[in-house]
Amino acid sequence: MRNDDLTKLARWVVPGWLTFLTFLGFIVMDIFITMPGEKALFPQASLEYLKNLSSLDNISSSQTLLTIVIGVAAGVPVGFIVYQLYFFLRWNSPFSRDGLLSLIPGRRKDLQKSVQYLKNELALRKKWRREIINHPLYKTDHSFQYRYIESFFIEACQFLDKGTDVSVFSRHRYLHEVVHTLGASIGGVYVGFFGYLLLRLKTEDLNASVYLPIVFIIVIAFFVLMNAEDEKRYKYNTNIKLREKDQDNESPVSQIDLPKLKIGFAFPSSQFLFTLTIFHFFGNPRFSPPTFSGINNFYMFFSSTLGLRLMLVLLILGLWTALTHRNANTRIKVGGAIWATLSTVGALILAAVPDKFSWVDWPFFLNVVIFLIANLILFSNRRNASDDMLFLEYNTIQRYLDVKNKSRK
Image 1 (tube, one colour):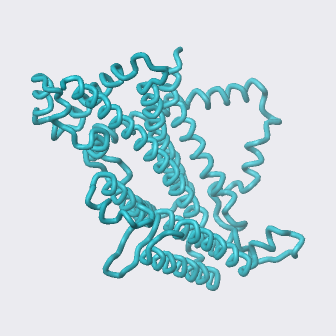
Image 2: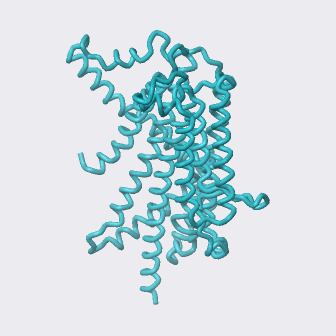
């Protein structure tokens, strides 16, 4: 098996294993966060359930090996299914061309990044090329357009890679595999999370009409904020006038501006998740147990002392402000101050009147926050790898066109 075959196999294996790991991870987190006496994910077990899982005293070595082999092997077909779902959403779904927030990046924007609106130049004064570019499907069908641009890029790589030790094509294939492996891995996280969600709804007989809409609203709110960041970044990449207008502005590109209110927010999706995390830190009973066993037990002392938790949060907020708002404009600084103040006040309210929020399913919603944090990490990494790949395509195509145009003179 060649190396490129192994990398293609990783597109299936990694998402498949990640599906199982995230599913089990959410279950383990749910069990650990559930307070004693509360209804657990598995009513017949608490922490003893995990101990029994890790105990292999009553299982023969052959059974253990068989279980491990089945679990590892199952990652391939599961990963293959996840990858097909990802490929459908990426290429063939109703949202594949124009995208759906940042959840499904639109292929049209990717194509615009790779050729920077080049059109007639890609014909190279050839009739058959012009017929393809002027075909009605070239404008309306992203798959039709991509097939020509991809073949043009490969042609450019074949020409530019001659007699060089550095292969543009190899670098592109590496980035291509990273982008799609991360994309399919995101799908694996979603399958694992929704498997956990369905298990919890069934096991604890929860009201799906309440849980599902709340999860939907939280997830959509996160992606609306992330999409606003991506749209701002995309406009900066494609709008020359906007870049010239803000050339002296050192504020982060990933921001939301509210000019009428004269405020702005830097990295709003991260701020949103950080606020939810602070709420858990102050409101979740697991992080603020009612008993206090003395200073010798550092964990109990730390988690049951409101002052220490408040000092830690203020320290983190101070570091965040210093690092991300150092060169920001006034709007961003004001918005950051408002966000930090509201988050802290909201957290203190949760800590001051815990009985008023006893209805909150803290273990479940902590897993929702962890799920969104995984989304932020994987989507951001995938976006960066995709931008790297698309810029390489643009750079390679432009170099190829420069050589071709120079040879005609």
